Structure formats: C-alpha cells, structure tokens
Image (cartoon, rainbow, N blue to C red; front, side, top):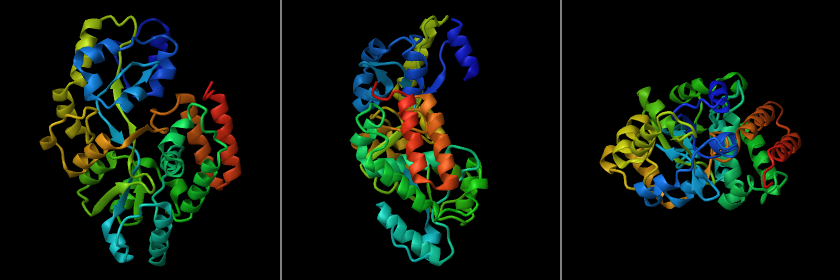
Length: 343
C-alpha cells in the first residue's frame, strides 16, 4: 500500500490495482481525484443491470462507480461444528444472540468453548463485532454509522459491545495468543464449536479435508448480506488506458466472473451467473445476495475509510483484552469523529 500511495501521489500510477470495493478506494484515491469514474463503462457493458443497485452504491461516490467488483465475499456467516453440537445436544444453530448464549451454556456444560476468537493481533474481534453491530442495529442504522445518521454513542452500539463482552466469556480461553491464520485448526480439531467469519472459511475447511460443519447467517442478521469485494479501477494517467478498459471488461463479464469465482471460493458480483459451476454453499450465498439487504464490511474496507478501519481494529483489540464497554464506546465515538462521518 505504501508503494501504491507513492506511485499515485507521484503521478506514476499502475494501470490498475486490486483494492477492496467501497471506502478503501474512495477515501484513499477517489476523493483526492486520482481515479476515473466508470459510469460510461458500466452503461456500455450493461453492469447497471448485472450488479445489484445497492452494490453499485457501495462502489461509488456521488452516483458514479469507480471500480469493478470481480467477486463477493460474505462477512456475516456463523460456521459451526456439527459433531460438537451433537455432543452438547444442540439441535440447531442459533438464529439470535439470545439463542447463541443458550447454546453456549449447553456447550459449556460439556467443557466446549462456544466461540472461536483469534486476537493475538488486532482484526479478528473487529470482524466478529461488525456482525454484532448489524444484529443490534439492523441494516439502515448500521449504514447510518458511516454517514452521521447513527451516532457511535447510540444505545444499539452499547448493546452490541455488551453482547461482545458476554460472548468473549464463552471464547477459547487462549484467544489472545491465537493468530487469525490458526483459528480454523481449532474448529477442525473440535476445540471450539462456532466461528463468525467470512465465507473464505468454506474453502479453508474443505482444504483441510474437514466436512463436519454447517453454516447460517451470524446471529440476528438473517436477511442482510454483509459484503466485501475485490475490485479494480482506472487510475487517471494510466499509461495503457485501453488495455485497462479491456481488463475491466473481463473483470465484470459473466465469463470472467464464472471462471474466477469457483476457484477463489467466492460468488460473482453479477446476478446472472452459471449456477452449475458453484457448490452448495456458494449457491446458497448467491441466493441470499440476490434477495438480501446489502451492507458493507467495516473490517474489510467496504463501509469505512482506511484510517477508521485501523482505529476500529485497535479499539476492539483492547476491548478483547480488558472487556471495558464504556472505554470501547468512547474510543469508537472518537474514531468516528476523527473520520468525519456525516461531515
């Protein structure tokens, strides 16, 4: 990112570059005037009809899109170990946080931690917390966190932090020394029963030849799809502009997305994919993507600018350590003020 920033500031941009769809690109390079709008390309390629409007809204600024999404990942997924559920006589995965805590108590009676957390460095707890925020606030108030319509001192944010505080009591006891990359091994080994994580988890678990797992939307978020996306845009001054346009056309095409996404373990941003190319999980995600409310992930660059992402991850890392709700909410409110949400 440092090299990219240097090149963009120095007038020597790459022809294109991978970036998370949404605010990660918009605040870093669109608002400063370093990217070309892609509304004409979207119109000529028919993407205004192929991509959901709520996705295009996330990709754009002032009604103009600035990058082409090549895939969609879902952030708000609860993955659960079927065998551990059977041991604890849990019949179904929790659909709400009240149900989660009831399940967690059953698991606790069998000495099984309920929630996988990996917070040896900032990031994982922030990922979990965005799903809790979505459950407490709903999609409209969640979106409002980033335009000033919902304040970070809102009672719904307080409730979310209290839910996280309580959930941490049911986490793997060593969560402050576990790294993000190692958390899947705890699920596979049957040491933790549930994990709130993006749907790249599906591919990771399959790669470990583990199949005794299921998935549902994270508690309280059914009907809402929290997304992140890898995307490419067109920097101003790109030396091979025509080639970039052709590359973006491939990125946004049905053929390109159907070639890439089954291998990546993600779903297309388009809603007209060839379903025969996708497995059961990806088909279920595609159906939800078509019908659900769409909101952007904080932790993965869609919902908020990069500076806030960093502050957010650090605040939640401290929260995971000291479980202090008031301190965390105060610091999140300050981070939102620093980010000028709603300004």
